[in-house]
Length: 90
Image (cartoon, rainbow, N blue to C red; front, side, top):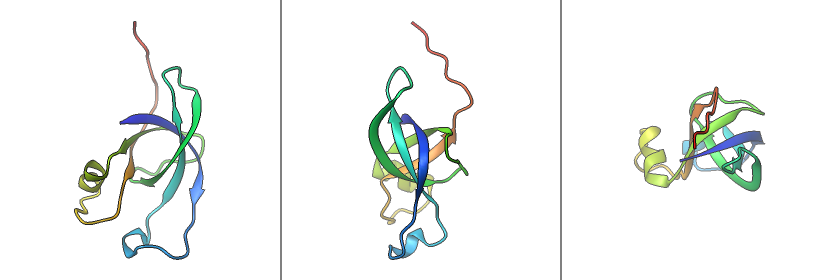
């Protein structure tokens, strides 16, 4: 799991049927200082996230498929939460 910030949407006119009606978002990974790294991921939106929001992502296919309850779907990354606040300790 990691944190990222939503920077846009991804539109595909030709795709696997699983993606029909699903939202794909472009997410920039955040480093330990919560700064964008420039490392982008295309993630399935399962929580209704929007541009500029900090989100929690799963970037591992099997876990993403379990969240979406789709054991055979071609999924790698899924947004599983919208982050309200981050508190660093130590």
